[in-house]
Length: 135
Image 1 (tube, rainbow, N blue to C red):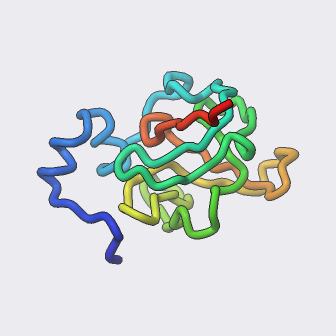
Image 2 (tube, rainbow, N blue to C red):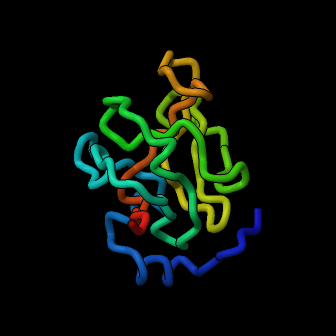
């Protein structure tokens, strides 16, 4: 699928740190409870660290105690793309940035969290950049 932001692999490697590249471009996962946004309560918009696309808002972030930032809905319906992931011997739904195709995390549903969508977008902190709301 063509993305609005496409770059050669060498450019992604040059623009991202090795750990950012591993998560965003190679679908790695940062260790649980280590990301800078896991417990953040700052109001604002979470954007893709690779391309700057706005993905999630603090208004949909919730405490899931899973070790990664959790959101119950993306900022806009077309902000992310969902892709079947059959890696690691299981079937999951991968969440990617719809603008550049970078790996963000996975989405789960039916876990019983008291959210309006019953979904948990489990997102790597390292794939995001928080832009705090002014005021």
